[in-house]
Length: 141
Image (tube, rainbow, N blue to C red):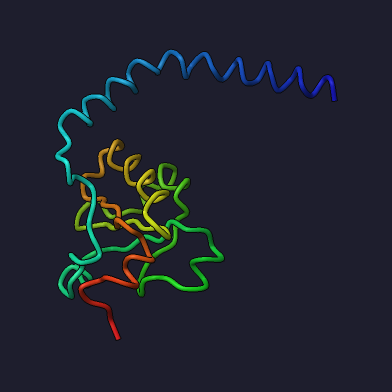
């Protein structure tokens, strides 16, 4: 166990060096993004999802597999929130892409990451699946 702890510490220290070197560039990119992002940038409300929006958007359920299997927005694809950066190529690079979780908090993190990675067409569904169930302007029958 003692050797494992030393290995983990050494591994973490080794990984920290490249991260520190990239810290300044990452910070600058985030600051630039935040400086120019409009207040409503990157969000959509359930009340804005009418039939035309619903039919033209790609919905991405960012909850875990069990929640997705239990219920989801019809036609949604499933990519868990923390997998979005690694699977960014699976998101369409044009057209509206709406990420959602239960309430919008985890999908907001995934949306932020996607937008920092250049996907300006990605939006978070504010209030998430719960809000969509209660307040969507239109739902398929």
